[in-house]
Length: 400
Ligand SMILES: C=C1C[C@]23C[C@H]1CC[C@H]2[C@]1(C)CCC[C@@](C)(C(=O)O)[C@H]1[C@@H]3C(=O)O
Ligand SMILES: O=C(O)CCC(=O)C(=O)O
Ligand SMILES: [Fe+2]
Image 1 (cartoon, helix red, strand yellow):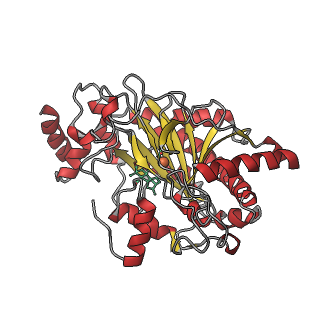
Image 2 (image 1 turned 180 degrees about the vertical axis):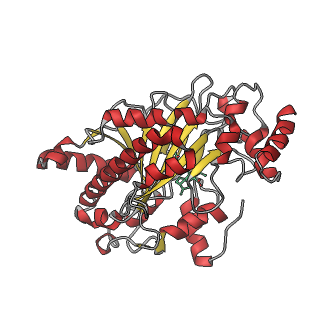
Image 3 (image 1 turned 120 degrees about the vertical axis):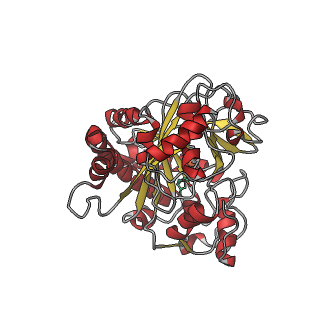
């Protein structure tokens, strides 16, 4: 148990109070554990081994080419809209090409934080995220938050507001965050992620226009709603794992925000649960993966699905993904447009939503859903239905 002793010593050397959380953050660190043959039981997910982790059936959806939309080509736009409508009615996932985000910037964004995850654990823990609704910073397997079913990943996250993308001093907020939190060595990374977040914001507003057209409520219904929204960029680093089939990089869940734009490297591992089976989302070099989150499922009155998905890990290869999560301004009321209230929802696909007429969900604010996932409920496959019950009972479902 030398690691435990080291971790206690490490905790005190870090000036961390040596409560269990901090020692766990060191002990249950995937980078440090990746050479171990036996996975600590905290990383074992009961239903992982029974799942068809290594299936190779792919989600067979055509790519959505955005070039025609950007050029104002009506026929190409109608084609893209139809593909989006079909995908979002079924499982909420589609891949976009000719999305307007520079390929070189994406490559830089994939590489710029790689060096961070190779830092010694004590340096990574100096920028660890704190419990609460501020999700920025480093996390190792969420070992300070959860006691079991730990995800085999390390993450680094930062926020970016769509309107005031400069901090109070007028500096670009992401550049300032990286400089102040990670220091001079990551100054360039801050500039890369500032540009990346700005490009992701523009793409997300384009996607909201297409979603509005596809639902028949018009291009600006959602894009205007999110103009003053916010986002969380999360870099997921999944080290190789000797017992990959016993754990998950990210366990089964739906995303609580409205929209996720994910870039994945060529290793593969993202799977979506659709029509009662797990299907792999194939990595495509020039594409970005888009998925609907719980908040947009509510804004579509359940016509579109926020689907359960997960990330499996690899015995031999590390995997890296960059997720951009979009949320409305924290205090805005999330409520589907009137025109969708008496529309028949699709139903099926195991992703919630669907059913007959009327409003399917209570009004809520993003801050409430975020608070729910950070203080009362670990986001999983049933987050949103639990949240709706919690809202009506206005007490936590369970703490973790
Ligand atoms: C609102 C959020 C909570 C999570 C980060 C954002 C959007 C995705 C959520 C998450 C990734 C879903 C899977 C479980 C989770 C705990 C994780 O693995 O990180 C979730 C995030 C979180 O609670 O930090
Ligand atoms: O890394 C992946 O492939 C998916 C991660 C994910 O679903 C998430 O972070 O919400
Ligand atoms: Fe997700």
